[in-house]
Amino acid sequence: MTEISKKKIDGLYYIIPILCFTPLLSSPLALGLGIALAFIFGNNSPYNKEKLTKYLLQASIVLMGFGMNLTQVIETSKTGFYFTAISVSLTLASGLLLGKMLRVERKTTILISGGTAICGGSAIAALSSIINPKNYQLTFALTVIFVLNAIALFLFPFIGHHFGLSQETFGTWAAISIHDTSSVVGAASIYGAKALEVATTIKLTRALWVIPVSLAVALFNKESGQAKISIPWFIGIFIIAILLRYLMPGWEETFTHLNWIGKKGMLIALFLIGASLNKADIVKAGVKPFILGVLLWLVISVTSFYVLTL
Image 1 (cartoon, rainbow, N blue to C red):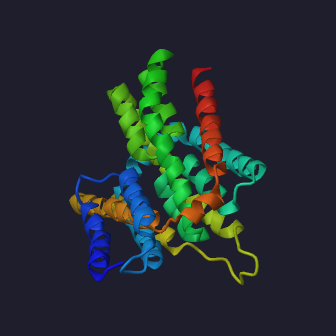
Image 2: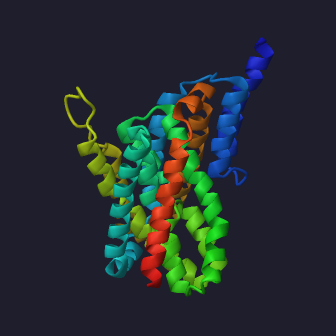
């Protein structure tokens, strides 16, 4: 590789993160660009991607806490708490069982199960900062979630109309069964205004489960030979961020900006994660993570649909 070519490639590692601050890039696109860059030019980077990704993920999760409306979550929890708790627990248990049956690597199983049960890429980011997965494990978990999100965005409204689901029922089903908040909002907005309102509030309640699940993973996922349990400190700051927004309503505009920065930071982290992948990683992971993600998604989607329409 000539010196000029290397400079051009290095430039992409700076240009693409800048583009993440524009409306041009979405989460799947940022991850896809990173993967493409890794496949075409290899894992060459002018900076330490792995170290930067770890701290960027943690900081982004904290900043995104400023986007959580605690009042809305508490109000929704009065009616949807038990249903959400059961669905999260069922999904996590089913994921761990299916992962063991399919012999998917433990860390990949935890990431896919957590992403499916809670809030997609955000939950995967939080859990990855605790269990420290290999780059290919993290990339594959995110890819599975994003692919299923894209399918759900178009499939769920079609199913809802086919079975004549009410606005409230569809909103609840979408919030429970679709991974990322953006796809939940997208599918619900297609279905109707009331569905969007219900889906958004229930999704907020579901997203808060990242806190107890992260703490549980930190407690029960101790590596062999590890002297002590690693407490995810950023989860504590994430909680403080949520409380600050609740206690300081006059700072709403500032908190909105901080939440925006957190979302953009997550896009940059996704790009860096994709840029760390290589062909050997794909061969090592195989198709089993995708099978796990699809089966787990079917379990929660079909089960919640049956319960809601019973």
